[in-house]
Image (tube, rainbow, N blue to C red):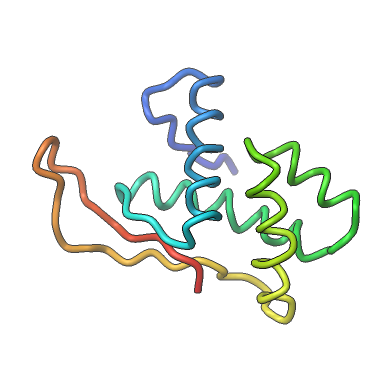
Amino acid sequence: MQHKQSKFHKKTGPRRSFMKALMHNLILKGSMATTLDRARATRMAVERLVTLAKRQDVAHLRMLIARLPNKVSACKLFYEIAPRYADRTGGYTRIVKQGVSRKRDGADVALIEFV
């Protein structure tokens, strides 16, 4: 079974940087408004990182530092966000459709936040 990944009309390197920036913003702010497709892609990536951070050992902290663009966001995820979900098995984020579309291109806007 093959999973379809949204490519956002970017090549691999720029797409990885773009996803790292989205994850970094969500972790630092706690919630952000973006397009629905971007929110869905960010949700998959961030939930994997939260699951990694729940292990609470040095190896997983180093993995987070490698996967996020900034040490600050990795430490915040590891020390503040992940302990909140220690007894939860999944579903760390929520996507709420705003019901409006962007004026510029008509894209659906959604709010992604931690539960």
